[in-house]
Amino acid sequence: MKEIGGIRIRVIQGDITDLEVDAIVNAANSDLWMGSGVAGAIKRRGGEEIEKEAMAQGPIRPGEAVATTAGRLPAKRVIHCAGMPPGGRARTEYVRSSVKMALELAAAEGLSTVAFPAIGAGVGGLGTDESTRAILEGVAAASRTVSNVREVILVGYSDRAFNEIRTAVEQWEATG
Image (cartoon, rainbow, N blue to C red; front, side, top):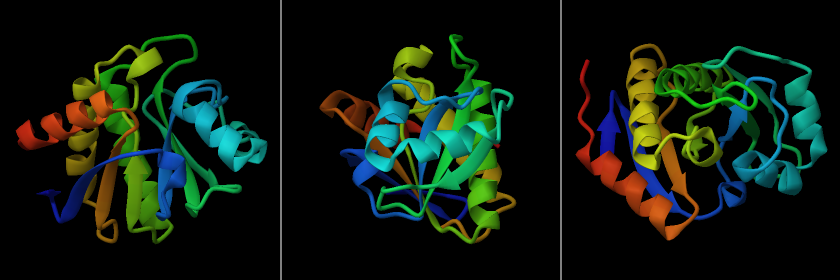
């Protein structure tokens, strides 16, 4: 287990939509419509109202985030991190920025446990290791200003994703 600025980092394998945490993160596009991948799973399990609520707050710029209710999910909130524009490619700076903003939103709402998928991986075009490093950089940046977020859970759905996330976390060192 790793800690970044007082925030515990945990890596698990499973379905992010099953987690009973304060918030789960949706790997979103900046228009906030929920198509495939993690977004599609959240919409299927939690309900279309999550997408409607998110889209009512958008569009946002890549690198930003918004929070919504969680519908039928066991989590309390869904935070939508825009790691890419619609139909475009994810960039590590978008992931980093959206993670920082997500944790600031969580802190403002008094949430202490936030679960993240590999934002921008898969259809976004980033490797899982690149995504993980950018997420950790976002956590490090947020840890300087948020105090009540205590735990970040990085979730890999497949064996491969879980192992890539775990390896990236083990190898990561803060650079600032």
